[in-house]
Length: 142
Picture 1 (cartoon, rainbow, N blue to C red):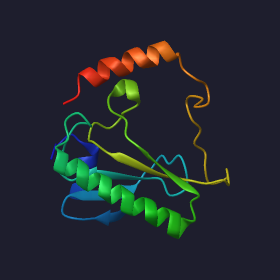
Picture 2 (cartoon, rainbow, N blue to C red):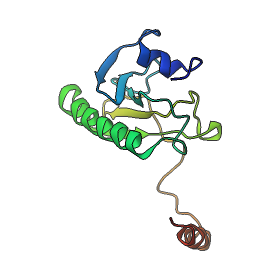
Picture 3 (cartoon, helix red, strand yellow):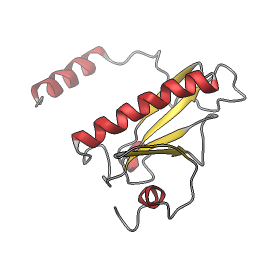
């Protein structure tokens, strides 16, 4: 754990939170700046700065916890869908540098759902650029 990390403080219980689930590896708690009703965060108990740093076993545990909670928000809160979101780096809107997945229930009822996309998914990209970037990434696979 990091002494300076807000989420490590939540995991340790020294920072107040509304915890909703916890196991040996992960902790889930309500987001205090929710985009929608029921928005929560899932974190590994062991500190990792971001997606590029988290060990595979912690990433797996966080993802499986997020899946369980996604099922719960659909069943219990009546969400019409769920977004899982990870922000890696300041340029990608990461504001707390402890890996976390947002579990964001989505609702047709906009009184419960204030989240809008920052881009328009229906707008096609340049096919040549897509092909060139895809080729570069494909050549770098592990």
